[in-house]
Length: 298
Image (cartoon, rainbow, N blue to C red; front, side):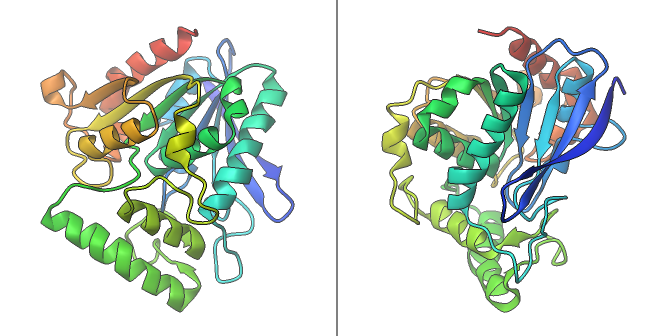
């Protein structure tokens, strides 16, 4: 590794957000904030052994911050019956606080890199608070979609039954979603956050279920930072290329850069929702291309 790792916390009074900081030995690039998706945490981007996109970028000279959303990862307190958290809170409080915190610390624009649902809540936050976009150099989205329009037997099982029906029942029983112990997620989820995601996955409208704010309408007025979307050939449900395209369109980013990762496109592997961020071969392909793009600041 050409970087060192440490942990720090952003205090938001009712809870603390954990940030895994990856500090390169030689800093020469803009800082990077990474936002994870549902039923996971910041570890999707890094490992203590130096694997993952976050570690790769740190070795290239970027100071990287991998955030854990409230209750997840090493954030305090942990998700449980006594700690709930909503998507609305994440969009309106947590993401703005994270961006402002790093912008003030480094006194320069930052890059945002998101996986899956992390890209949805980031887009919503920027549409709602357009002044935040002025503090961002570039946005990167891996497998980000809001609604799932594809139809298949696997989608019916994983989304219609497990996510949309079983998961709310589990939240009602336990007071939160115990996705880790039930072995269909890398981390647990707050009950309200889970219910908010279910609403958006099934809805054609990009509207906040809490206060009816219209994110699609607001996105049309936003001057977006340069953005790049990645989808994977073998991502059949959680970030299907068609649904990534739908999310781009409703966020007013239909003309943003888009890459489909797979062998037909010249990649070493037909990537899926997770492997496009975790497979060792990614460092020989799209990680390199992404690094070059981030270094070429506008």
